[in-house]
Length: 205
Image (cartoon, rainbow, N blue to C red; front, side):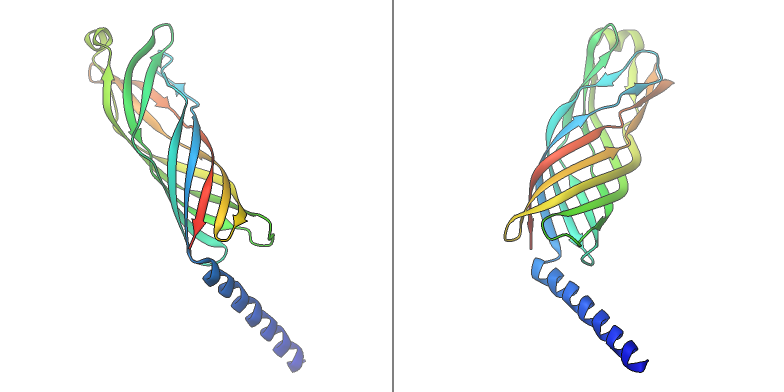
């Protein structure tokens, strides 16, 4: 019995050592660049049918691996200019939004040909350069809340294509909303809540 326990302990130690050796060989950092399509849900409670447009945007993320399976990812982009539309009126203004997110990830390592992962975390979005058409501004004096905190969910896969180089496919659901005001009074909430589908390359070191 003692020999069996000793053998099991030895196998466990060797497995753990092999896993950490693989992590060391790969390096704890993974940096990706992606092209991402933003598809907004646009649920508006003001009665105006407010929405922002869909678009393709650049994205960079930085991932740090604490172990072969557990990692944290910081997702970054540059401020994105969006069109504000209303039902029956078309475009009524523009805004910029900057939506960084931080996610905890679990990476599945049992397959050698590809490495899927799931993630969950938090998103902070900052709205800036909010401008409405002069006629809309004169009639309603509209404004929006400039900050949004919400959750973020993620699923993706890294596919090795060369040493330390990965092809990446990634889908995120990000919860973004802003309160809408007219003449200083809140009239509703615009929930953007986009789905972001991306493809890119990652470098691990």
